[in-house]
Image 1 (cartoon, rainbow, N blue to C red):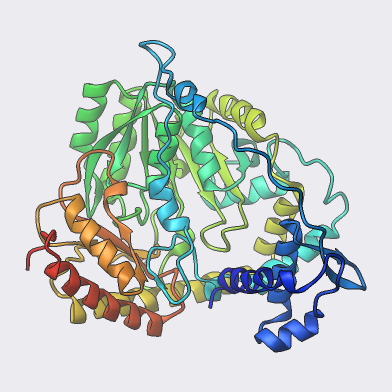
Image 2 (image 1 turned 180 degrees about the vertical axis):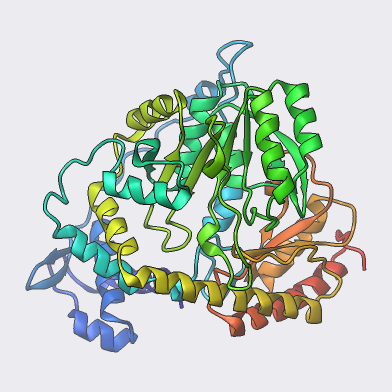
Length: 489
């Protein structure tokens, strides 16, 4: 059971029993609740804290938890309908629409119900996260002199130097800004590089979180088709000429969702094409530390060999550690760095120093390299298990590319339709007890074929993968039998 689910369940049980107690009356002790509900002390503590935050109980250190005084009745509901007019006002013919669609992001962030196999997750399963190392690093960081003071706005020099070394020898700490994770870095980069209303070239398919950031910034994503060797240079050049875009966002290594690696011959070509167009490449290098142990040598980042400052590099520690270690980096050279710096300062001032110190503590210990080696093996094992299970149980589904890094498979569904096929499959899968990510949010235009994305990094292990695919087979059969299904055979 997920800890978040057990806390919510226990809080709900306690909430339903509060009427048994008079205001000010003491609730059972934590020890009694642990024994009664067979929950961990941490779960009980968090459930009580949740009730206290809701105002249902009052906690007194050393004494326990007590039922709070009933709240006063809520006043009459207000009328918020005026907001629809305000939020939909376009401000004139040149204004950029302000609506934001976060559905593609929420599909990988939403916690499934208890018992559902999480093939739609965007982060490592807790069993793959270095939780003990993170806890130890945070404890050591909190004791560092000045750890709770204000950090430099660009980030700690030592952490910037570490990221610069990881990206490539041509960069120094002066070329790096510390960010609150990769998503924040992408948002900063897009705001810095293109004005509202401008086109931005993106791989097709691509990461929904980036599409959401672009649209929220007022940009117009324009798709550039990619294949198993990454973005096609001929189509990239055509797109620059046709749109006048000045930004291209790509994931050259283990691209999300396809897992493709930009071919060696295409790497220099893509940079050359952008340079001739007077454009920037935003390189989202999110998966470099999610490499599998059968991958072989990795190509360096595009930013590692970029004397003209065409590439703005984005990377982070979040994907390879924990969703809550939101520490990343933006690397750039030339005048653009000052604009990136200014936008970041205006948006967030700085990344909290204790988090930066904890990141430094983590990557500076032998535990860090051991974690990366272990993770590399585990991801390869899970990828192999998922691939084999799909071929055995669901041979009708297409897996055109087996990645050597990242944490998911891009799976094609038979048929030519788009949303109907995916909708039937996603709904049937959830009924069968498995959550999967639909392919539609990964395209900024009409998808050429239906897909789903299956994460093997977000599940507990090979046994859960086998069970999840078994449930998917049931879902597939149900979707085929559904009257509205167009999945074909």
